Length: 172
Image (cartoon, rainbow, N blue to C red; front, side, top):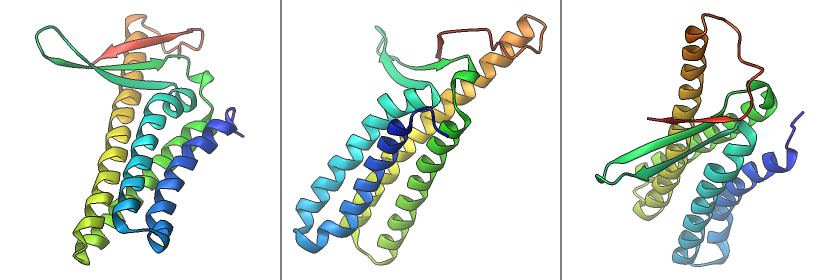
């Protein structure tokens, strides 16, 4: 069972709203209004996943910082203590995130085949926003695992550091 059922629901809810708006609202409203609403819903979903559900469900955060020399540095923040992350939450986050990516990709392909450029652009935006979140959360998770391996090697131990608290920031 989830340690954060409300957050799991929110993670699913905004993705569901985007898809439902894409399918159902077109029946009642003009295409432009629906497309604007879907874009807003996808954008809200992006922000919620990046800043809330990713942090609370899988203890990962990512962002970029612009340095003084105009270079962009990607920062990944993660909790080291894996025991604080529920297996259910971890799986739920990734299943919903990847299912959303696949769904937007399928819609994009179908719209391209049907030569519906306007809807293809909306689906492309969904692919882009979900893809960005998935990619950077994957990098963040990968960096966490690499850092734990590095710490284990530095201490010449296979201890999984379950005693550690807090989080670490890992620049890319």
